[in-house]
Image 1 (cartoon, rainbow, N blue to C red):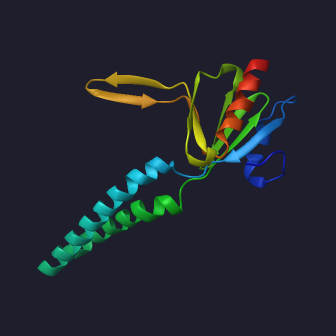
Image 2 (image 1 turned 180 degrees about the vertical axis):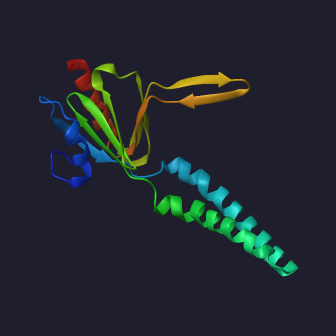
Image 3 (image 1 turned 90 degrees about the horizontal axis):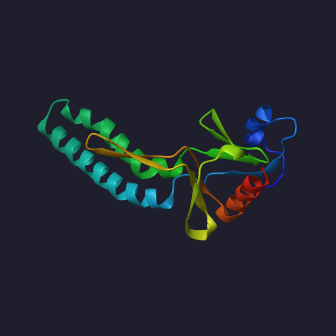
Length: 171
């Protein structure tokens, strides 16, 4: 977490600032939520193990069948190692008027005055996530979950929540 320092990773929001808008906080996600990582690793190991087993078995049968398993081995390696190492970085800027989020070249913003109710989820070490406007809905037999906006897996989530709450109270 950084306060009021110059860094090009966070300049994406400046172009959208209103004349009387100023930055209060900036930060970035720490990658995937630790609980998601813990669920993905066993699945990835199982997937990778099966892909290796199938590829070796098909290769021993002869022909080119073993080559069809190589893409699945690559996917298994990515699930186990790639998502934990590569991960998308998401950058956040909170101002006195809005919250800005930049992820994979896309910029989202939401006005603090129009924020739906928030839910804070704390993780180990003070990191956590804030979800705004959670809703559950059903289509046919399937249940779905969605959020309007979120700040995910950032350090010192209590400070972020306090800053947002103070600005909501002021506006």
